[in-house]
Image (cartoon, rainbow, N blue to C red):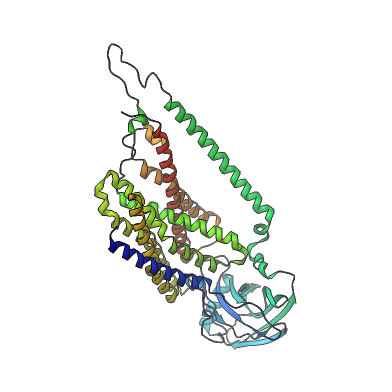
Amino acid sequence: MSVLSISCSRKLVQLLLFAVVLAGCAVQADEESNTYVVGEEVYVYGNKIRPLRSPFEVYDFFSVPGCPPLSWVQKSPSFGRMLLGDRMYRMNMKLQFELNTTNEVMCTFTPTEAHLKRWRKMIKRNFVYQLVVDDLPASFMFGATQSGNPAVYTHYSLRLGVNSNRIVSVAVESRGPEPVEVGRVYTFTYGVQFIPSNIPFNERLNSYLGERLLNLRFRWVSIANSFLINLFLIAAVAIILLRTQRGLLQPADSELSTLEGGDGIIEGTGWKQLAADVHRVPHRAELFCALLGTGAQLCCVASLTIFATVVNGIRQRSIHGVVTLMLAFYLLTGLVAGFVSATQLMRYSALNPSLLSNWFRCMQVTLVFFPTFIVLCGFFTNVVARIYHSSRAVHLGGLTFVMFLLFLVYCPAVTIGSLLGRYFYRRSLILLNTENHYWQWMSFWFGASSGIYMYLYAIYFYFFRSISSGFFTLVFFFAYSTVASLAVGLIGGFVAFLSSLVFVKKVYAAVKTE
């Protein structure tokens, strides 16, 4: 390695370490300690509003005609909230810890005809509000239909569970329905009640997960059931492959037999004929290696996220924290993507030296393939969210910060991984039986087909099992399903190719060739 390359690598490593510290600080940034003293003010934030049966169609809490927020200054969002488009403004509610109130006025509001028209539409679609108290969300109905006439709720009763000096539960009940009529003045009120609770603070999110998911016995039975099914399938496939391989490797008279009346020898047929061909370079080797590297990276991201969630406890992590965690792992595992793709390309370059000059192109494909796909899906969904005035639109600040991290962390990580993989190297039975030596792409597609299955199931689920409807929900559901299916397909393709590579090396190690 040249002195210039070593110097560049050192600078990239230093830059990457600095970026890791910066990203770590962003991930570790926590909010307040969630502890209160008697009489201390408790903030209530309005988060979002959505139809009851359409979880993707989300709008800002205060985009609905009614009481304005106490201030239009947003609560400082976490990085995960910025990516998910969450916006929170403080509501005009004055809550003091451990001090109950009954009928406090939030605001008075006289709606116009346009406002009433929107209210009726929202009541017809069963819209629900969501507010946040001490990082705990609580949902409540916007209105209801009484005797065929729409009515809007004007009183909100909050019940806050308290354990010691911490809030461990939040519940909101809508009351006081008033008919939606022109010229009526609506007075919105609220009340709060602090009630003692035995729920530990570290288990306060359990109620959002459901008892079935939290039941330890249920989880162990599910894990054991999945493990036994997979073990049975692996054993069945292994027995079939071992018996087939043993039968094909046994010397038979048809393999080495003398022709009647001659001295010729009939060589084996089928997969043994490919002993010199199975390790040939596949078509479009740069793309193939880039896909393998991306699959290895996503496999690491999934494994690290699952491990971190299990260690820290899924009950204590919100979806926003998991999104932040996944992004951090994705940025840092760019090393894996670059290393795997470069190493595999160097293996192929030993058979085809012309590939040595294509390592930079392979690195570029590894660098832009998956992020470009996510950016395109995100751009399309963002445009739809803007058209519908939905809060699903990503914050400009969050988008800018993601691009900053991609350039500061991800690009150097992939580059360093590619350089390490480049210089480090310098220091499927049915296809083979049909004499098809193009097994690399085939094995990758066999594994990647799991992503196709996942996408087909998503289509079935949306149209036949889901209660969601509307163009907005359809766009977001299938955009997210496409990204998830692509990620699963790349992971499956990487694992399938790795398994096939081990199998091919083992099976052809037993074949004696001239």
